[in-house]
Length: 375
Image 1 (cartoon, rainbow, N blue to C red):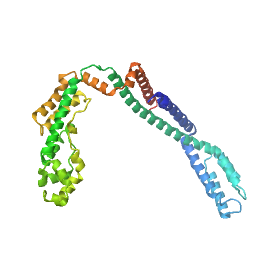
Image 2: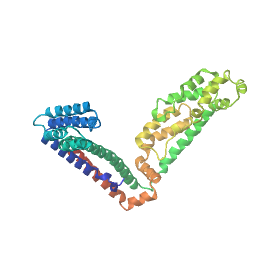
Image 3: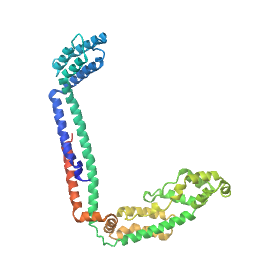
Image 4: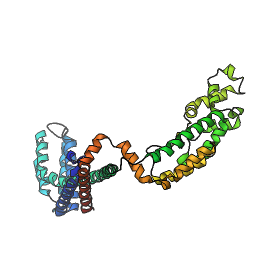
C-alpha cells in the first residue's frame, strides 16, 4: 500500500481531530457544562411543545389545546433560572406566542427566536461529534499501524530474499526432503492398502499426540464401527468397495450391510482423503527449529507403520539443520521459489529500500501522533 492513497495522512488527521476535540471541550467549559445541559433540557422541552401543539393550537382549531400550549410554554419560561444562558431567547419566544390566535408562521418565528439556545445546545453536540471523530481517527491510526507492520515485514522479507545467494547448493536440502517425502508417501499408501482399517485408525489416533504430524481425527461413529465390527479387519480400499455394492451382494461379506453403508458411505470423503499429506515436508522447507521439532514427531508417527529406511529418512530430516548451512540454503530456496522477475527488478533499482524507508517513517509519525494525543 503506497502513501499516495491518503492512508499515510492518518497522523495529520489524528492530530487535527485531537485539536478539534480540545477546542470543542474548551467551548463547553467556557460556558459551563451544567448550564449548557440545562439549556439543552429547556430547548428540547420547548421544541417538543412546538412540535406537539403546532397542528392543534393554530387558527380556529382546538381551543383547549391552544390554552394548554400557552400555559405550558409560560410555565417552562418562568421556571428557568435567571442566569441561564440564552434565557432571553425563551422569553422572546414566549412573548411572541402570547397572542389570542396563533398561526403556523408564529410557530416558525418562535423556533427562530430560540436560535441562540440552539446554538448553545450545538456546543454539546459539537463536542460529542468531535469526540467520535477523534476516536475514529485513533482507530484509523491503529489500523494503519497494523497494515504498516505487515507491509514492513513483507518488504524486509523481500529485501532479505534479495540478498540470498541464488547459486547456493539447495539440493543439499532438496534431496533429503524429497527422498523422505517419496518414501513416506509410498509407505503410507502400502499401509493404507494392505493393513486393516482398524490398524490404520490406531495409527491415526496415535498421531493425535503429535500436533506437527497429526492426521485428521477419525469421525467418532466411523471409529466405533471399525473397532467393534468384523468389517474393521478389512483394508480401507475394501470397505470403500463394499460401500458401492448392492445390499444383496454386500450381505455376502458383512453381517449388517445397512450399518456399513451408513458408516463408511457417509464418511467416504474422509477415507478417500486419508493420505500421507500430514507427514510430508513442504518445499521450500520450514525454518530450522520447526523442522527439528516436526521431524522428531514424524519419526514417532512414521515408525508405527513404515520400514526402517523410511524412519531413517525422517531422522535424517531431524538432523539436517545441524549437518548443512540450513538457514542460508533455505533463504536461497525461498528466493528461487518466491522472487519473480518484477520483484528482482524492484530490488535492483532500490525501489524496495525506498518503500521500506517510507513505511518506517510513516509508522514513526503515527506512533508519535498516538502518543501525543493519548488521553
